[in-house]
Image 1 (tube, rainbow, N blue to C red):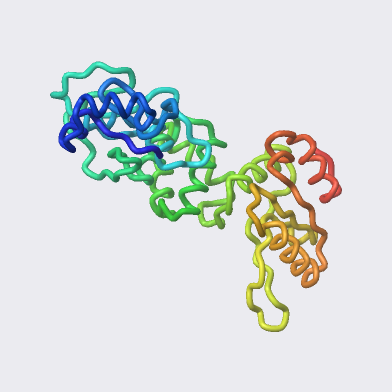
Image 2 (image 1 turned 90 degrees about the vertical axis):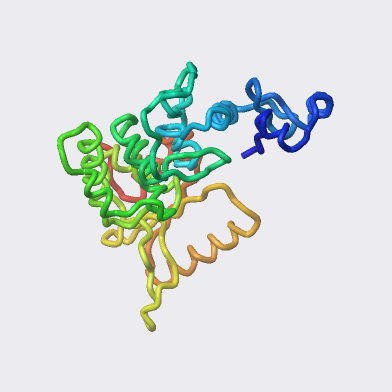
Amino acid sequence: MRELRTAERLRKESVSPDQLRWALKVGRWTVVIRGVYGRGPDAPSELDKARAIALQLGGVAVGLLAAALHAFDGAHFKQPEIVVQRNRGCRREGVRRVKQLPEEVVVVGQVQCLPASDTLHMVAGRVGDDLWEQMLEYCLRKKLVVRRDVEEWAQGRSRSARQIRRVINARRGIDVRHTDSLLETLAIQLIRAAGLPTPVRQYEVRDPGTGRVVARCDLAWPELGIFIELDGQQHKDQPVYDARRQTLITTITHWQCGRLTWEDVVVKPEWGLAQIQGLLGCLVP
């Protein structure tokens, strides 16, 4: 995230008004909101503007803004969600005055923010089941949430508790291994929505001689002898690594392999689904 500075902070750093005007003119800094500046010439994003408001008011980012700051999978916000002390004389869209600020906060992108676990709980019931599942998988993957806490959140009759129970049940329990990427989560959701058999995620393939784990399949149907490898954004050596892993898995298991890309799952899901159907030898109901 780009560096932000309030006018007050720049004054404390002995930046004069003339120096600031020159920095704005040459693109060293850019006005994000009145009284807050961002480093560099790029136009401020909505996230920059929301961070600037929180920084200027000394507030705490909560809700979907906090989810975006934590970079949860699928997280986006329509307007800032910031809480400030009740005695702050401020009227801004998305800013709410409270008697007491949250006790536990973390700093993300220079802004005080609810911790990831509290944020995940707070947005439950406010977004769709699929989106909340994507956020949950991200938090499990990054070890930002404790499974026991999620089970406790699922207790009760609130809207958020009902959603958490639905998501836990859909993923076959909270103890199921997390996905390894957003693409894996989206692929599982695509398969599940089509009524196809649910695959095992991150299935461990072991050396038959030593029993040592030598590879993991992204998605697998062990009883059918089928696995799928998902190709996300590639870095330099990823294609070679994936090919070697696929060869190793098929050599040990003699399973049939399918490969899906982001385009197959997200851009043209009907094409990706057709490939999965072909592998499983069944039709979408």
